[in-house]
Length: 260
Image (cartoon, rainbow, N blue to C red; front, top):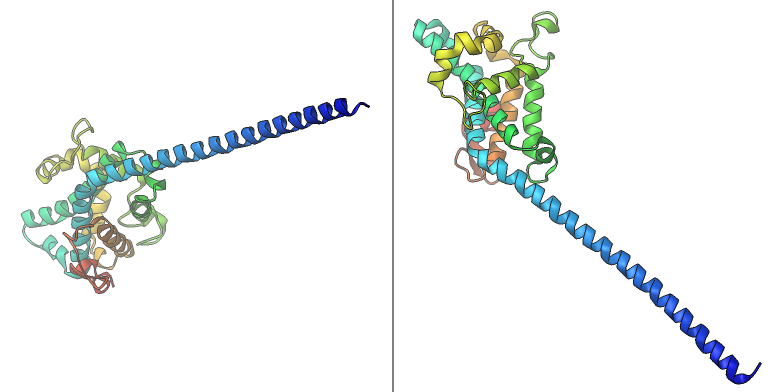
């Protein structure tokens, strides 16, 4: 073969190899850039989801904190401070002691119902900055609904038990007649409509309160512990709790001694 022709062929072949190599490299770079772009977009979407979940929690943080705090404080007063001695007081005090406690329970579920109506539950449970609160709320729901505690004889007799359906119904009723209000009804509304509206859902809890079993209730003790954890998690500004050297020292019902 003529040397000139051979040189031309070699040069041509080299050009093809370089072209092919460049094409492969460009393709790979394109794939890598696309992958990086996709990961960045996914990260941005996840960040936005987390921010949205956190924003909604922050919007309802104060009402949820108040509801959890007052329910926890009432349970503590029942368990440790003989609050239900008022059941032997005047008819008015007896009714207020019972309905006031039931209102604390109802307001907690009402606040939760409002929060869940505004927030995608899956996002709330998966977002890193709201996951712990979501887990505590889920634990609260389970502790209320399980029949493992406070049995008189069989699981049918489990005291202070509120099934998920009852929890949701109470929460919906606390949002007013149309079940759409963005804040819970107050005590006057609850009191005026208790017998007609709320009693079908809360009468079993009321009977358990009046039975004298509340101070020794395993369920209520467990709920107080979860409420204490929830309050300390929600109280970012220390408005409701006092922490010294990483230990919560006030109020009593949130401390380790108060939970014992």
